[in-house]
Length: 67
Image (cartoon, rainbow, N blue to C red; front, side, top):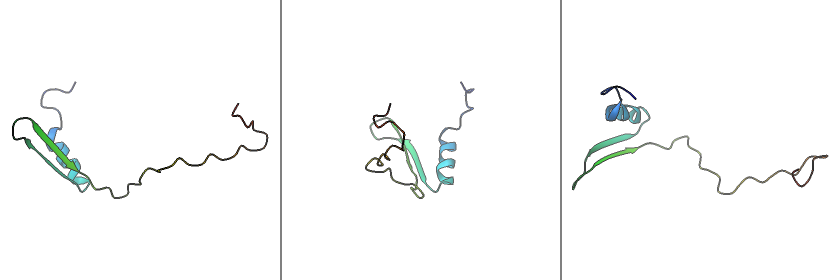
């Protein structure tokens, strides 16, 4: 457990988000509560494949039932 006041908190979060080219806002919500909102760019991200990759056929000598 970090000592009281030893965490990075919102300031650290803002610094990390900004370093990655994003934006971060935080503050109280109307009606109560607190909101933290971060937007990070998706540059360089590759989308997950929509269908699984095909399974290659077994090599010669390999059992065909997977055992």
